[in-house]
Amino acid sequence: MQSSKRYWYFAGFLGLLIVGLLVFTFASRGYYPVLMVNGTLISNGKFKQDFQADSFYYLNQLKTYHPEEAEAVVIPTLDLEASVLNRIVENVLVREEAQKEFGTDLDVLVADKLTRFNNDIAFQGAAESLYGLPFADFRERVLVPQAQRDVLSGRLFLRGEKIEDWLLKAKAQAKIRIFAGDFYWDGKAIRLTSEDKKS
Image (tube, rainbow, N blue to C red; front, top):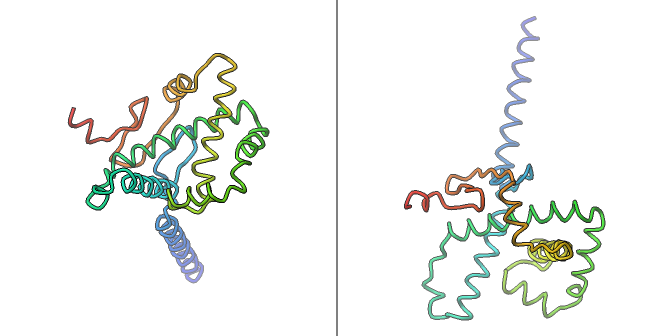
């Protein structure tokens, strides 16, 4: 009886230890969520990769158009993070609607739109230089969402709608949760909590 109790205590302790290690591993790799859009969870890892790419692009634009400011510039981190989060929200909403509209044909339509970039070495090199991403990542993070938006825009245009108007309605109806204290959802966009305090 004693040995049976000891076994269960040991098994429970071992189970808790394994769960703790898994949580630590997932958290340290950025797998914890920062945002949820209509039930779709966005991991901190994905968000950080998008943010790094945008930061890289921002600095490259400065170096190109304002080289004298590029060395001393301080990236407006929270503003840029809010911009990235808002783009992620829009991309998820667009993808969901495009999947409703086109079903399994969506992937084919998107791939067709992106065919011209497959062998364009100059474009691929420019994209990698501008965003600091391998082209495969640039394709998934930038080109695929843009192609999905273009496909959905075409369908909405045939109905006499603009994607901008559709997005306003979709955002108003979306269920958005943010798991980062610096931001909140105001029903239309992700805003900085500090901005709210200033007003």
